[in-house]
Length: 372
Ligand code: IPM
Ligand code: MG
Image (cartoon, rainbow, N blue to C red; front, top):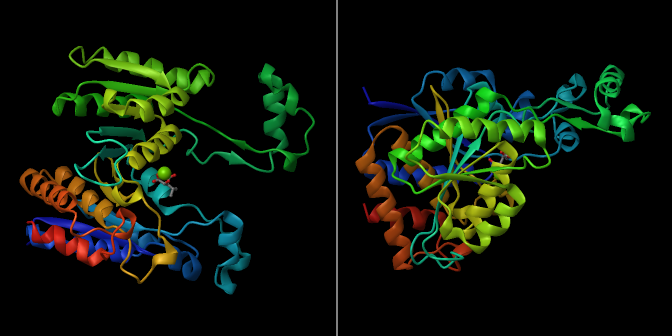
C-alpha cells in the first residue's frame, strides 16, 4: 500500500493544468502516494447546486493531505444565474468552496511563504524571505452577514451601541452588516503557530499585524492574545503594527521583516502584497492547515482566459506541493524540489509568459523535473 493518500482536487479553469504540472514533479521525486481525484468547482455548482459535493467532503476525511488547483468564483447573483434551470428556484447561494473547506475542516492556519528566488526577473528586490500566518476560519470571513438587515438586529444594536445613531431608521435593504468575529481561541492558535514556526526554523522575528487603534474590540483582542502567547516564547523577538503602516513598510523595507501573523482579511491582503514582491501570483503558494487535514493550493484563481493554452506559471502549484511535502515530513524531497525550482529560475532558460518568456506550463514542469 502507498504510504500516503492524497486528495487530488483540480477544480476548474487552469486548475487541471497546474495540477498536472505538480504531478510531473511529484512523480519524478517518487513520492509514495495514491492520488484520489475529488469533484470540486464551478461545474458542480451549475449541475448539482454545490461546488463542494458531499462525496468530496467524505473523501477529505480519509486522506493525509490534499492538493487543490483553482476554482472560478462569481458574485452571488451572477452565480445563481448560471445554475441549471431545474435548480434555479431553490434559493441556492454560492459560497466559495475553499472558504467552506477551511471552516468545515477547521484549517485554521493559512501559511503563505513569500521567498524571492535568486534571479527571478519579477522580484522587486532580491533576498526577500517572508512567511505569513493568516488566521483562516473567522474574522470578516465568519459568514455572519445580513442584507437586508433584520429589524430585530437593528433594534438590538440601537439599544446596546452608542455608535449606532447614524444608521437609525434606515430601511432594511438600505444597509448591510458583515460581522468581524474573532475569538480568543482562534487568535491564540494562529499566533502560537507563528511563534512555533519561528522557533523551529530559527527565524529572526514575529510581527503581529492588526488595526487595533480603530477596530478596538476584535483587533484589540488579537493583540492581547499576541501579548499572552509571546510571553511563552521569550527567545523570539516580536513586535506589532497597524496593517496600513505595514503595507507601506513592507514595500519599503521588506528585508526588515520575517514572520508575519494577521487576522483573516488583513492576512489575505498582506499576503497578496508580499506575493507580488516575489513574482506575483505565479509564485504564490498556500497551505490551509488544521490539526487533522491540510489542503495545499496555488493562491491564484482559475484564469478562464488561459484555459487549455498551457500558459500559466505552474511554480505556485509546484511550491504548494513542496509545502505538502513539508507537512508530510518528507524533508529531503521538499528540499530537493525547492532547489530544483531555484535552479530553473536562476538558469532562466524556461520562463512562462508572466516571467517574460514563452515557455508553457508543461515545459516549466519538465524543466523542474529535469533538475531532480
Ligand atoms: C485567497 C483567496 C480567497 C480568499 C478567495 C478566492 C475566496 O483570495 O485564498 O487568498 O479570500 O481567501
Ligand atoms: Mg486572497
